[in-house]
Image 1 (cartoon, rainbow, N blue to C red):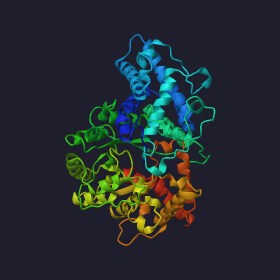
Image 2: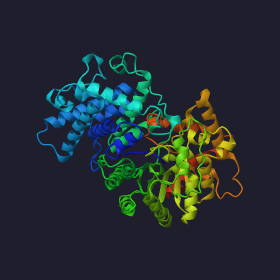
Image 3: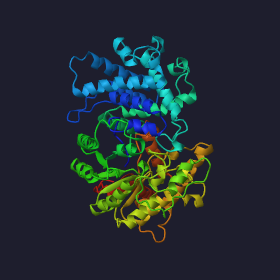
Image 4: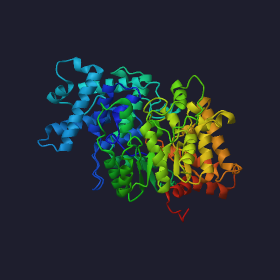
Length: 562
């Protein structure tokens, strides 16, 4: 119920990196390089992606930093040589060639490489033959200018996001990468220590996965689900792929001195519709609705529907609430470990009046027209500014649905409230009193009280942890609380039971999910196998969680063979 197949050509990548603390010029350089090396899907033809993507796919699956540096560098080297030697470049090839070179010069300027010699780095690369291989693959071949530039650029970007809630909530920052060997190029040649390597890897994985074509992204997802799949293991019948329309929100807060996404958002929805057809309908495509497009958001809805979108994602951390009513208060953990920005945003009005006016139209429109809406539901995410994640509060959605007479809205609460420290760790809160102040608790109450509100448990990696210490406590609390919600009687006054509304999801391909998709699935299988109820009840509840509830939300027929 929760995957992403967009790539670097779909996102305002530089703006996202900049919002997370990467200096503007460095962010722009990384964006241009990512766009230049992103694979191209010919969605009208069979799957014959370029062979270099396989190297990148294998590096991602292995979560190997050195291999990722090599694969990313190798793709850039390949495209530069190819376009440089090409007598007649297509307009698209010309754009990618210029993106590669301008990205290199931006990285060089951001890291100080442009001052080491008289000529720009791009000129030196074009005038001097660059190797096919990189030092990250064979440290014995020596460091060339592109090796040095990549090492410095990713190291600086990693240092910039250190301590930031990069890509997702703070509890998920530790990537658990397989450590590079002590004699690897990153350590022995570039002197990058373990802490630098971990920070660098956050940025590198994000850039690397964004460099895959759409078809390759789908292929990697299938590979990920097949890793360590038991002989009797299940395959997914459908994947719900979500787009995100983000440029206008970032531009409004950070200015328009950034490039537009390579694909305009209507083109993105067209391509996802084509990809869904390419998968014979296994992919269910969701577009996105952006209240910052306050003048023409309906035209984007129409375009999405015309191109097969079955629903739309909406993302409050961009800087808006479902309704901006100062009387609605979002509780925030008073711990000094929580940034004051979250407490500030909880009591301040949202910054964009025109986006809030659009929300008063969007919710009734979706409710009247039976359209599915998928919203982010944790206090942290891709926040345009620190603190904007509190705008995802499900209590605000409740107030908006009641105020705008949209009680029948088909709303899906992604992450189901999550497990972040901003709201006492949500599902993993230490006490019931704290739990009742969390996004998770308010999300549960919404699915119980409204006919068409559902939730997903994607990217809650506490399900995997059973060791000692903080991670072990988080695991134990999450498992105990989920078990309690499933097994208890329906609360007095509730219209629906939680177990009839909760769904499985992953939030693939956020960094922690890459390479662990089957492991995450198996952890939930194991959870249901150990529920202390009779076997037929256990199987029925698992069927609802993994299949039935999602089908009901999506309007798909129930499976006769379940």
